[in-house]
Amino acid sequence: MERYAHITGWGMALPDRVVTNAELSRTVDTTDEWIVSRTGIRERRVADGHDTTASLAVSAARAALECADVSPRQIDLIIVATSTPEHLFPATACLVQDALGAINAGGFDLSAACTGFIYALGVAADAIRSGTQQNVLVIGSETLSRVVNWKDRGTCILFGDGAGAFVLQASTVPGGVLSSLMRSDGSGSHSLVIPAGGSRLPASFDTVRNNQHYIQMDGKEVYRFATRVMASAAREVVQDAGLTLDDIALVVPHQANRRIIESAARSLNLPEDRFVVNLDRYGNTSTASIPIAICEAVAAGRVRPNDLIVLVGFGAGLTWGAAVVQWNVTIRPEVSAWHRLNRRAVYRLSRVRSALRRGLRRVEGVVFGQQSPEGQEPPRRS
Ligand code: COA
View 1 (spheres, rainbow, N blue to C red):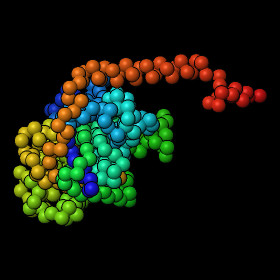
View 2 (view 1 turned 90 degrees about the vertical axis):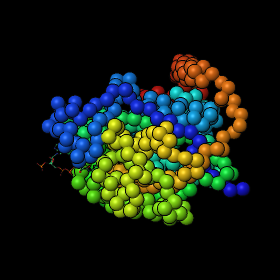
View 3 (view 1 turned 120 degrees about the vertical axis):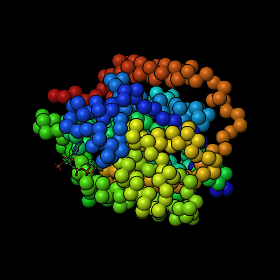
View 4 (view 1 turned 180 degrees about the horizontal axis):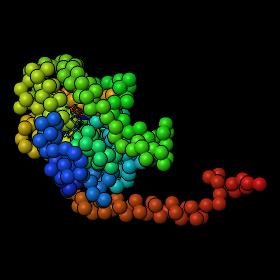
């Protein structure tokens, strides 16, 4: 029997702190008028000392799990799309897995910059359709405020922090993710980059002094690229799904710049009210922007059952991608054990479990610390 990958839960998380354009104009040479007219952005959220990419991801994931009425134990795979992982390794997805108590899940991070969520959705849907996974958590989470140079007016006005998550579940009911498209062009890798901190340019006094751990961008080049690929990707993915643009109820574009979205609407010959735009309040939250926009569209009643939606994004890499989703979320099991459980207790239990496992590792370290894994003494250095 054919399998389909349905979005059955969605959730978002945002830091509380709002940074307005007026506030930015006190620290860099810019104005609210300039930022609004060139980008459409009025304010963005910035993580405080407590929030991290993983903590925002966990909050969004919990909301999505509750929405889907799925317990963390039922999750087989966690994909965290992010440009601001907690570490080079381990994967942020593993930290999220531990915090959720998703003890049966594998997890990995996906790096495709702002297109990451679309890529992750495509990979998750393919894994579900192939039969290897049943329930997949797809998360886009960012703390871009930590990699933005707050003295660079060309970039610091654009970005914000936040997270969004989907639960994807297998079903034999037709619908869900109908088609997806992933593209890249590394010849444009220089136009949006954090040059240092990886293996090519490890951290040093020089890299810090030269601001090479911050986002560097050729705004005009990225702008031209974005306006080129948005409409063509949307058109192609709609065609792949056997549909026409007239069938599409809503387009949820990556929230980078209002002018880029308006240009895509013109190229596609679609009215602007068919596009979800919330970048005025959050700026560009990279991988989180599309799921956050969908959560808000659903909450505002803009998405009706069986609606066909196009998600389309672009970003560093260069990467771009799109997906067509049918929003039919009626496949949930009638009775779920998760529904009856005290969720707070479950989350507390997952923290206790994690602490116990850490403790056990420490005890193992003390007991077996002098031995190699085979139980032999490690060779001594002469
Ligand atoms: N406030 C005031 N002036 C600013 C400014 C700011 N925040 N940022 C740049 N300027 C100045 C420039 O220094 C330049 O001055 P000059 O003419 O004296 O040299 C002038 O404004 C025009 O700059 P320019 O870069 O040509 O502006 P633009 O119209 O291209 O807009 C962006 C700049 C960044 C808003 C626009 O290029 C853009 O949105 N690009 C896409 C970026 C993006 O989406 N990145 C993420 C992709 S996922």
